[in-house]
Length: 110
Length: 119
Image (cartoon, rainbow over all chains, first blue to last red):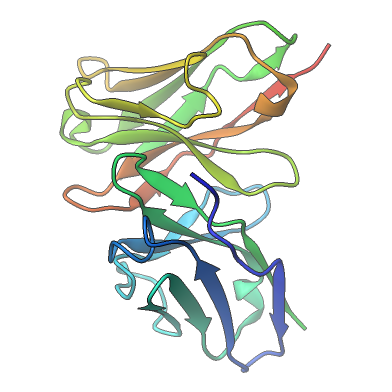
């Protein structure tokens, strides 16, 4: 099972919007509406930001949103803030494997 | 409050063994499926292994199959990862993670324990 493909880095100024793509295959992202996104600050544990493609856990700001089309999922951060600077990983359920993570994207707030 | 606390990491020589533990508290451990996930230096997250609530169903990533063994003790609220035949590429921070009940995501993570495989 190969890792899902994410851009290595994205950047934006405070207040701007950035989007991170997550491309998989018909065996993972394309087959299941079980894509989740995790934020990880240096030296910290990953934190669940989005699950089931579009849902936000309690406490996650509504500037974080998710979507999916075909084999590609996306995370959008609207109104970028300094504390959003972190690494972001997508993850998809993949049936019997059963999970595959993305390659990771570093978000930089300029 | 849900807490997951990993322990057991350290420096080990190639070919050696190590046993990681994850102590769970703040929730009914026996009711949740659990996972190990790792992050190698300079690399991304990699799913490593899964165990069902009873321990009857187990999965491994291809990269560790045949070398790592996941287990759990519901009476002790603990998750384990026995790692044998360790390789340099197993060097990583290892996290235990809880799978959301009836969900397909990892809703709680421990802080991780560092495993370094080097001579």
